[in-house]
Image 1 (cartoon, rainbow, N blue to C red):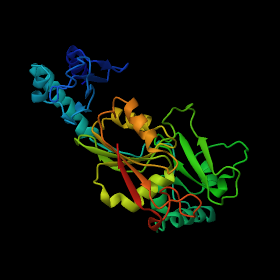
Image 2: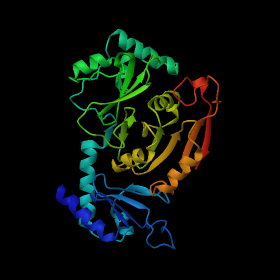
Image 3: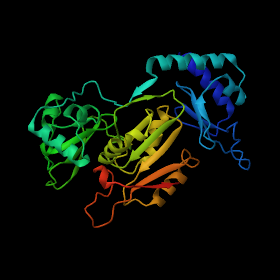
Image 4: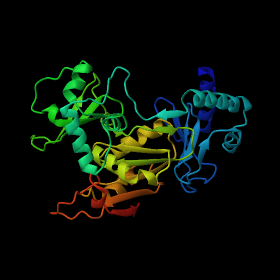
Length: 337
């Protein structure tokens, strides 16, 4: 398999890509379908993944799919051996891991629905925010929540140094890579409402605190929807109130900050090339921020992004300003950029 992948990479690099990642797993070349810019011959928008799944996506004309003989010929490659290598590698990938589980749980972590007063208080807080009626198991497994932190720490051998944050009064959520737990005080009595706890030896990266809701995504599918919010409670609110509006190939993720570009790149590098992006924004982030974000990224500059705000929010009112609240407190206000 490694020899076949190397053969494909070697051939794709003959296309004189305008951009190649340092690990040589992705390239961008001029698109044979839209022609890219007719004025700037160095312009290139066709992104090709040079590892299984071998897929492509043009960030200008939105043409996308799985590499095959016809696409290779459109690119000027007439090598049947390369085509057979791609077919073989993609088939093997689909059989082994064509459906990705967006859980990213480490095998040595024991995350269970605890039957305790602390867990009950956390689940009540969770359901009261959304007007929902999820049981303990769903909150724990679907939303990757730690509902009894002291018991979780004990079961997983995690030693916590004495600090000012009381974890017994907080609900936590495992990050996508399970290196962090993002805690939220449920009593509103602690000096800090949120606390980010690193439970790994990893020093962390820009996306180490990224969060996603568990789900199965077919990586070989040509199109995906990526729904992003800044915070975890907002993305859970969007999922709870609006998930019926989306198909199965939708990724619900929270940037846990404003690192939207890093989140988008994270999923592109995992094989989700053709992303339709929707951002459910905090009320205090102006539309100009997202316009500058789009203009600064080669992956976004030619894409249409949908931005939603909570139109009911008025400064000085008791209405929640974002989406981590009950449905009747939300009125979607839509912008296209």
